[in-house]
Length: 180
Image 1 (cartoon, rainbow, N blue to C red):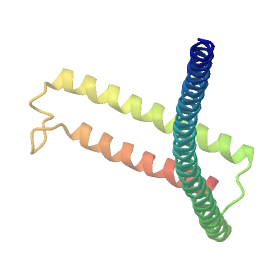
Image 2: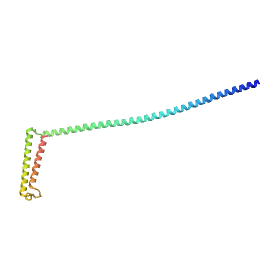
Image 3: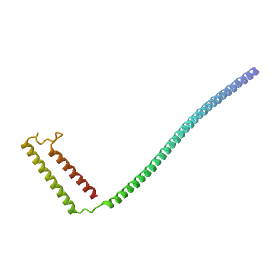
Image 4: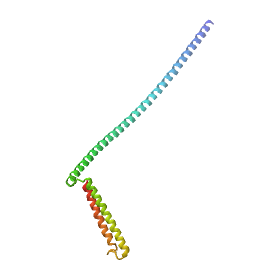
């Protein structure tokens, strides 16, 4: 009986040992699974972060490249604009120089008195023209419109008035050119 007792105790101890070993093994397997799951998750996170970083770097490089192109284009535009402005300024100065040389040949000194005399003469011509036009109107009204009509249906007074206006206009233009 003692033997059976002893065997029973030994079998019970054996079962407890096996049970504790199974529990330890089961806990170790669960821990290993958890560790493996965490490792996979970390790898996935790391891979995702690397892909995001690579995408960011690619976008950054593309933007830098575009800005480089934009900066180069802006620099070219500024350079071209400056060249055009310099060329325009040189052309303007050249033309101004030629005009000054041309003016030196024909220029006359116009004093204030000459200008006042010219204006007075022009005013006298305009007054005389106005008097002639008034006289022509009264003649027409006294004689009638049919008597003063010219060959082409116009009045002879109007033709002479037009020629006088054209000559006065030409004189004022020549005075303006000489004053330059």
